[in-house]
Amino acid sequence: MVAQSIAGPVIRVRGLEKSYGKLEVLRGVDFDVARGSIFALLGSNGAGKTTVVRILATLLKADGGTASVNGFDVATRPADVRESFSLTGQFAAVDEILSGRENLVLVARLRHLKDPGAIADDLLRRFSLTDAGGRKVSTYSGGMRRRLDIAMSLIGNSPVIFLDEPTAGLDPEARIEVWHAVKELAGYGTTVLLTTQHLDEAEQLADRIAILHQGRIIANGTLAELKRLFPAASVEYVEKQPTLEEIFLSVIGGDDKSDTIGTSN
Image 1: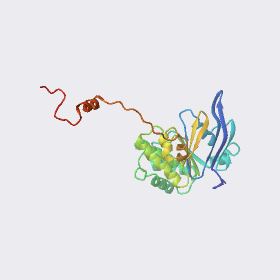
Image 2: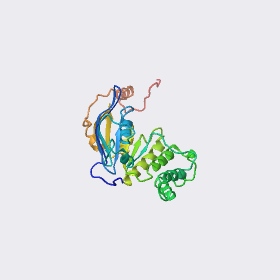
Image 3: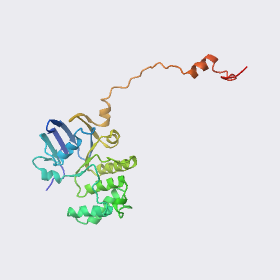
Image 4: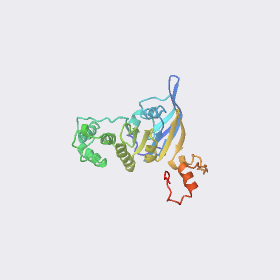
């Protein structure tokens, strides 16, 4: 039986290391994620974000360091860890032949939950998909598919959800739809760890942001704390060169509008 509540951070990572041959992907990563918060792991492609998620999801073994999810060590209690989270990858894993509601009902049945229809209807409502619930997913927009994918991840009420690049490949409107869905998750008490390379996404969503660069966390804090790391603004006076128009108006006095260039005598 997986514990429903633990003291301290719901995700704890200390000294995480991972290499592929001579390539050091993670070089001592440390961070904590508070329960019910949205934590963004921000970094460019190749920074190691997905590697961190795969280790936390027990899909990959670390070479060094420790990590725990919901109080369970990922190396020694992987089964308990898997019961504590849901993972949404970079691409929506939905069945396009089925309707949105049928996708949700299918997952609920696979998890042997009671009243899968009621579960599906509740999630459709939460993610503003009720009107589209009876339509085939093949007719959904990118944002609707992603919201359905996230909704499917919540079936079973996992206390933690990993979102790996949740808006990858989406247009601006669809990204905003997914942002609303992620904020909704935290509103219901779910702990969210998301990876992203989009600065505006981390700024919009995260309670805390960790910047992962070359396998290390180089900054970690709230948006306000990270802003304080930036040098204070300074005022500089730059000499402005006049335009030819300004020179002309200055020479002629500026107020005499009776004369114009090119006027003949």
